[in-house]
Image 1 (cartoon, helix red, strand yellow):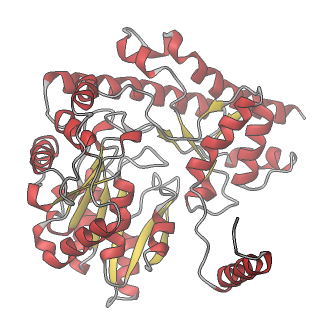
Image 2: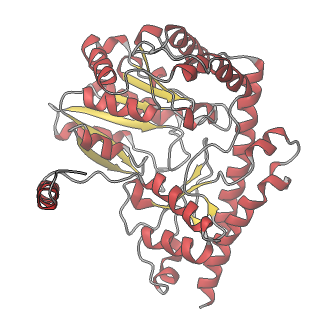
Image 3: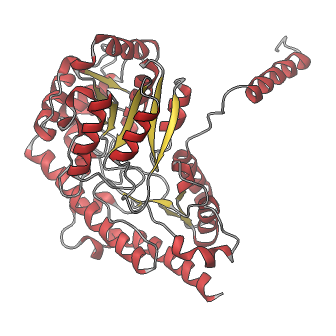
Length: 436
């Protein structure tokens, strides 16, 4: 039985509460993880939910990598903090071939998912402005604050295809030229599915080079560019671009938690040493069997090329269909360049939605979940103005294994019917509002 009195416990709780209210902004659970749990709970209660909220690959893990994982299941040794040398060598060769970028094995860190690598980098920097597009992935800004950095939003728009412009970057650099700037670029992006065009990317690189901006290129969806045309930012700014990627998206292995980060030699040894220091004091090393399996995943073979190409074809066809159907319903939506996200804008329906008590993106997604059974995330979760009627739609609610094995037009396959019904549920819900 505990010797701690109830009054002592209450005192600890009171001190904690006082510290929280007077301290920094709270770090709460990620919106993407919360919507996944909420959808599961509703399904457990008997509701049919179209799961467009959580961005997890619907495809099976590359089979040879699964076989390698089984072969190495008994591996139990702590591996080097930086990552297995054979894996780092394979990853470097892979990205040099696929992206034509100068990855070096000795400048790679292997981490438990790219998410923690991103945080490790931010924590290893001197004081900096972390420039984050709005919209962008939900965890960038909380991670920046947790790392003691200043998160700065650069607001994008539908007209700019939700991309930060070179002019925006230039303006912020001019406003405080002495402070280190770190621009986060995620392409193809989460939540938009979009990438900058080549000319815009080159101009961003020119601004970054002129002002000494460090670019953190989150290219976890790079291999899932639907036309295989992803342009790594390091092609245009190799000396100032830290790149992250991993197995979660293109290899369908999110739960394996393996990410990679390349820090170019031009950035010096101190930053790299600090990242390794964070790694050594936190995760120590990535799971041994997964690192051995990843060597196989990063071995570019005809089988791997076919596996990735089929994913691109499936996602490209689905993304185009979804965007077209939403645009037909007067929900303006850019067709995606890659990945499995759309960022629809319901602005044209503002008046009808207001009549239903909906004025914010959070209210919009709450009503869609409750009344139509469609799980989406509000644009406000991605840094947008709460009154902007945008949402993120992850078009992953389909049988990925069946579509990988199928032939013919994707939208005619039985495995896609749940997704089609989910999109139609959104359109029907909107039409009901127009009839009121």
